[in-house]
Image (cartoon, rainbow, N blue to C red; front, top):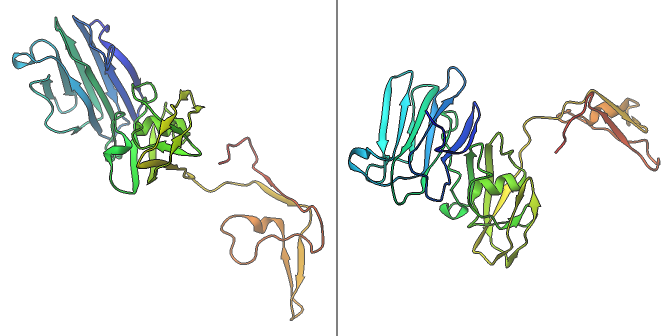
Length: 286
C-alpha cells in the first residue's frame, strides 16, 4: 500500500504520535497509509483521538480512518466527519493495533492526529491539549512521544513558566521535563499569570514572547531514584567526644541520603572544607 498519506510519525514501544500528511492543513487526494502500533508483550494499548477531521461521505466510503485490533480480530470504524469516534479515548484489548488512513478526491479536511500509550498510563493526553483545558491547580498527565513537531504555540520559558494557552506537552519538552523521543509523566501547577512571558530556545524548540495571562504553567521536575554513590571522601571529619567520654565519628560516608542519626561534619575550625562523591561512572545529575 502506498505510504504517501503518512505525515508526522514517531512510534515507540510505550507511546507515540502519528498524523496524516500536511496536518493540520488539508490532507492530499488519493493517498493511503498504514501504521502498525506495538507495545510490550503483556500490555494493552490506549489510543487518544486528538483530531479526526475527514470529509464526510456515505458510510465513510471516501476518506476514512479504521483501526484493527489484530489479536482480538476487532475492527473500529470507519471514521470520518459524519461518523466520528464516540469517545476521545479507545482502550484496546491487545498490544498490536493497525491504523489505516485512506483518502480519495475531496475539498477539505485537516486529516487526523492520533496518539497512544500503554494502558499503564490512563492519564494519557493528546499533543493538542493546552493548559487552558484544566481548571485544577495541580495537574499530572502522561505526554506521548512525538509532540514536539506537532503544530501549536508555546509562550514563556522554564524559569518564568509558560502562558496557560501554551500546548502542554510541547511546553514540557521545551522545559526539559520530558524528552520528545520518549514522552513521559508530567506534573505541573497552574499559578497566577505574569505580565510578560519572554521567548527562549531550548531542546529543539523556540517559544514565543507572550502578553499577560490569567494563569501560567509551572513544570515540576521529579527524580526517578536516589543517587547511587560508589565512595565518599572529605577534607576532614569530626571525631566528637560526648559528655560520657564516648567517641562519635561524623565521617564522610554518613553524608549518604537516608542515613539515620548524625551526618557528616568537617573537623571544627577547618576552613575550605569539602565533600567528594565518587559515582563510579559518568552520570547525569539533576
